Amino acid sequence: MNVGVYGSGYLGTVVSACLADLGMPVTCYDADTTLVMDSAQGTLRFHEKNLKEIVRRNVRADRLMYTTELESVARRAGAIFIAEDTPDEIEHIVPELAAVAQPHAVFVIVTPTPVGTTRRIETELRMRSYKQHVVVQPMFLTDGCAVEDFNWPDRLVLGTTSHDAVDVMKQIYRPIVMRGVPLIVTSYETAELVREASTAFVATKLSFINELASLCDHVKADATDLALAMGLDKKIGPRCLQPGARIGGAFVENEMNALASLAEEFGVSLKVLTAAREVNHDFSDQVMEKLTSLMPSVVGREVGILGLAFKPNTNCVAGSVSLSLARGLISRGARVRAYDPVAIPEAQRELNDVVHFCQTAYEAAEGSDALVVGTGWPEFRALDWQRVKKLLKTPVVFDTKNMLDAGRLRNMGFRYLGIGRS
Image (cartoon, rainbow, N blue to C red; front, side, top):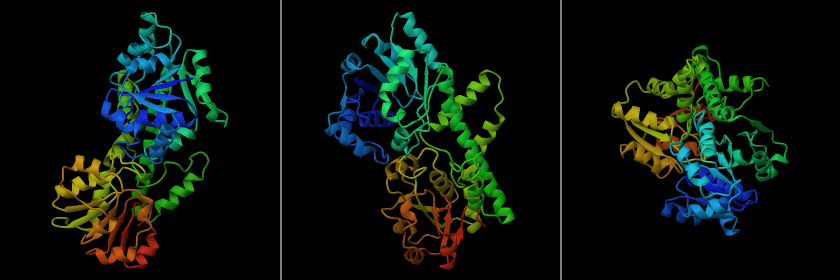
């Protein structure tokens, strides 16, 4: 079966490449000629772990093609994945495709959409006498782990009213289903809600452990050990229970806004969601407060920041604590030097050249009054910390990800501060 993918932004690129890697012949459409040409050559406009290699491998194998000709994609494909990064035009895109697609094609909406969107799309198709099937499939992809999340999902969720569509989806995802991954078939509304609800729950979990980390600072407990002990409880689980993390990424804010708006529309009070969003939003302020406890005045001080992406293995800076910290430091009169392996171009667009961007971690440390680890890139663990100590004006390290060996650094003469690790 030929598969089409509408959109070659972040989501469309991940979906098309990973579907091709499952062995499906995939054609990815986008109206942007330059974007299509770049993608066909394996040149991506964002960084996602292992994705570039998968795109290039499948292009070479002729399983993955890119085009600007929408009708040719629609006429050939038995299933068309709608994978735009924003839902703004989804309700116009699907009827447009239905006019030229195969009569019994399956439209698979993987773009995060507000609850009720897919039901309206199906109603519109039936009003126009189109017979194509519609499926909404929430994608639980995490920036930096998107390929792994696609290939090894915890579950596949399909919202549809069509048994035929389910059969088609089972055929597409056969390699994954055969591994025993649960397949949940439910209503449109439930499938749309599950992603928003899952995102909100992760935000709640992270917010809770970060609040406990603040308590740990006061009672001389270790938040890292606390999270480990809690996470070993099967009722809780270890994932997304790391103090110092904050939920971020390109889709997160929209999803939580959509869930809050839905609840407000129906007069439902989601108090836990409101509190979690507040804690998640205020986490950057807490980081700033802890840093200023090391330096009562930051005016005229130089601060080095290691990591600008909101998490490792991605260049996405949406929700990045490092960017919020850089803005806060500059507003208080400090100077900021920053390094990230892949996210500097994105950070430059956000920070408008008010930060000195460095080519290495050592350059960011040189002459700084304090060094902040803002992203958990593994390479920061492997730094020559004796060299870092010599480069720093004062040996102060603020590890916002609790990723470094606190005891070792303190024995080396660093003043070390973590999150909930007094």
